[in-house]
Image (cartoon, rainbow, N blue to C red; front, side, top):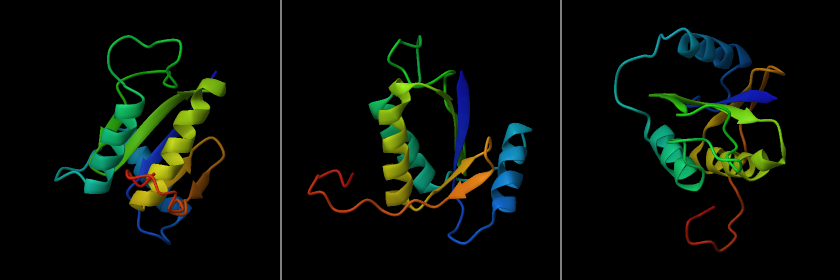
Length: 126
């Protein structure tokens, strides 16, 4: 069983309708051209460093399909609905909060702007 999440470069206060429209545009292949939002670039790099999205999927992988769907303003994650996804979900939330990105859950039509993580003394800021 799987589920999708979309990490979106939306400004705080943007609406659920904005998230839905962005996801539909991305799923339809309507990726805008231009430079990648640096928050999305950092998010993708740090997420892939912890949970690679290339090669053959391992038993420990949280992904149901790879590579991750990355555009200039989004990353769409196709995730396993199991305990192996829990560490990846925590990292997604921490990164999104730290970078000021939104998380959209299309299954429940919920849009969330995570709070930045509290300073834990970790040199990486996670």
